[in-house]
Image 1: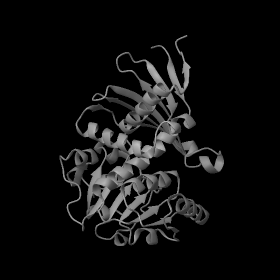
Image 2: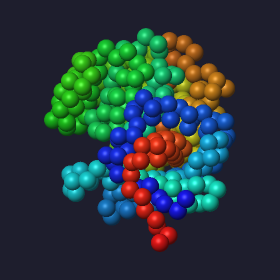
Image 3: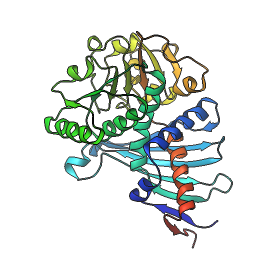
Image 4: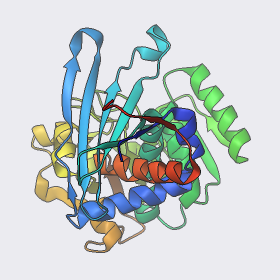
Length: 330
């Protein structure tokens, strides 16, 4: 093969669904736990002058013979200043036999969806079976995909959403209520979103804790998705001290996940981590063991999630003849 398949965002969206991406992410975590993945921790380039960064995420899934790399930026000022998404990404898939680039595709939508799917997978394995109330801290794209994924695995009766901007949370609540036919309530404070929630999803760029320990009741499951770079933290460290902590990857979580600051401060040590989500999925460690314990999933986002998802998209594109063919070697 000497042609590369190019796929834009609308084509990628045609080729997969949230349900499939949840399955892809679960598979990715399984292979990671079984040590069938070669995946160095993501590398960062910081554009301090422009308040942004670029992350480079390579991966080889030996168990599936799938490989590739994602480049993804995070620029929080983009929507307001440049009319661009905060997060944008490109994924290059590589044939591990030859190194040939078999596909280059938009990774922005895949990043948003697989991040949401990770919360869905963690909720499936760690939340109480009778969970009904979901609290959202943050009302951006990742809150939307997280809600979509959790809807697949949890019988949600009520959603409470909070964020800094009144207009944003009101619009989120209105759209989500219409889309899913369940009551989604915009609340004025984070405290209101947290208290009484069976499952909590946090998706903010906070650098100071915004969720207080005293608000979190027994039996809560927390998907901590927002901390994805050094210095970010959404949860009061006392929450971690009284919780069962599950991570996706120690190298990344300790460097840039929800636990990065508590680890630096010596509040959380590696021995305090219960294990990886993949280990729970394959059954090598237990997940939730009582209705009273608080569980926290610290998600940093792994390249293996992107590559397994993107490879599935690529294979469907080949089957359906979707995408532009390009010979970069001409």
